[in-house]
Image (cartoon, rainbow, N blue to C red; front, side):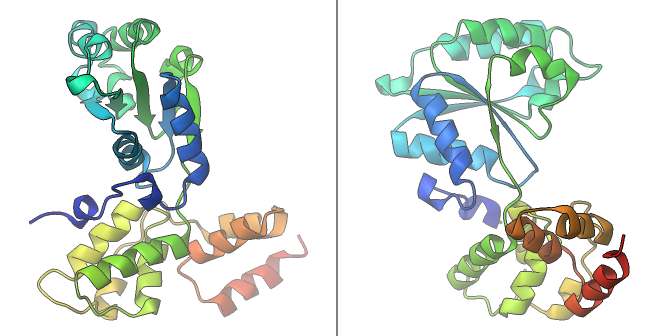
Length: 263
């Protein structure tokens, strides 16, 4: 069974939703054959946007998973060859190193140091991906990279993606149920799509009762975090997103505001 996250992944940059600024920054780095460090929460389009941009530019992507080569010898052999090797058919090339955190920690035996050295000798654009770029082992490599932040996808954007998949798969899903799935994903499109596929496996209807049994994800904001954004923030859209992410009745949330606004 093919996963919907693969079937409906963005094919062109136009298909990438909610990351216009990040895509623009990424393209600028790729055009200059520079080094980009993409970071942000899971399921926000970091890897898929690299492939989408490469498709638009007619580039080849050579993807390497950092967890596959944690020591210096393998970094030199695998990544070193990739950075200097000519692209097939004389096309441009993006060398993509995903899950950069895979070569940090106790298992790192010189891999990060070797990667630092090899980046200085690159002949193609290099894109590194991690959820957290502030790991102290990335301190040297960060200075050589353009940092590109991917933010959580807004609720309405995830609903739009889910609605598109429902239409393609001939699924009957209410707008309210799709919004519930989107909220539960905590801004993670991949998680929302996986939930949708799991709930609709073998049937054509999304059943509300089955949505309710899904466990809340760690990414879901607490009421207190949402209150802080609403009462202390200056960005109306961020406040709306903070409230949307909560699986909480609005009347109940207003009671929380009433209780805390004096503080």
